[in-house]
Amino acid sequence: MKHLKLIFYSTILVTSAYMLSSCSQKNNKQAKSEGQEQSQKMKGNEDHPKGNGEHEPRDTSGEQHNAGQGEMMDMKTGGNKTWMPGGNGAELIKSDFHFITGSIENINPEVKKVEGSPVLELTADGTPAAFVFHSQYGNVGMIATLKKLDYKGTIKLIHHTKNLDNYEFVAVSENNMKLGRVENGNEKVFDESKFDALTGWMPLKVTAAGTHYKGYIGSKTITHGHDDTMDDGFIGLMLDGKGTIQVKSIEVAVLEDE
Image (cartoon, rainbow, N blue to C red; front, side, top):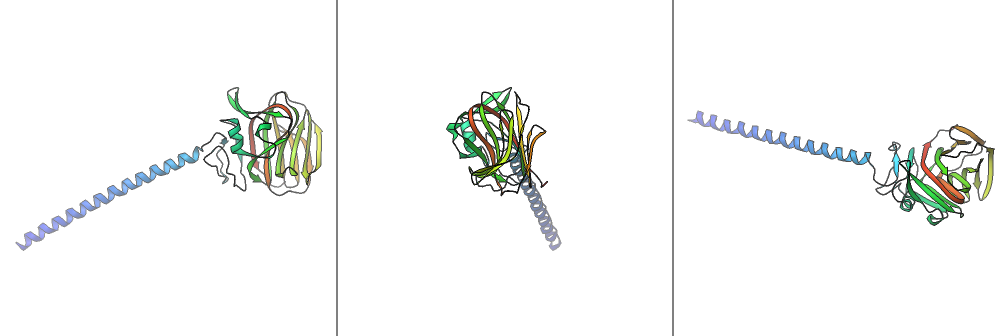
């Protein structure tokens, strides 16, 4: 009898242990599945940032984007990116840029479709207006793909910008390009040259790498100058004229010293 009881209790213990093991494995598999699902959701959110301003390719340099239309206001250092317009023009400007002079009313921004692609159309009223991204850069290259419609005046790509009295630039007016800086309100020209005016889209480019400064139309170097480096600053566009231009994209790249 004692032998039978021993067999009975042993059977119960083995069965209980097996059931506990099965439950544990089931719970572990369920937790693992839920964890993988959550990981996939987070990855999906990272690959598709929200907002009207499109930023491609996805930034791999550590730059962050907020849940609104553009960049975070408190970012210190910017990274490589391509900016393209989307959504409402006024809201896009408010989200992705801030002004160092002028205001939205001076450029009347609208996002329009041109040949199937969104472009930012700016109609300047003659009041100087300059708007810059929220992040700051040291050595930097920037290309703005522009088209002048009935615009008359100067278009500048500005960089190392602190305020209206301190920034560096490449400026085009008609078929003339000027490269230089404004320091404490005083303009210093590094180089100036003529170029063949374009009637369509114009890729206006500037690079600042160490003490080397260059201005381009497309891949062709038009101006080249040298000077001391400036502290990190904002990058963007300045319009000093009247009429309409369109902006298809702005490409930004962090550069090494030349």
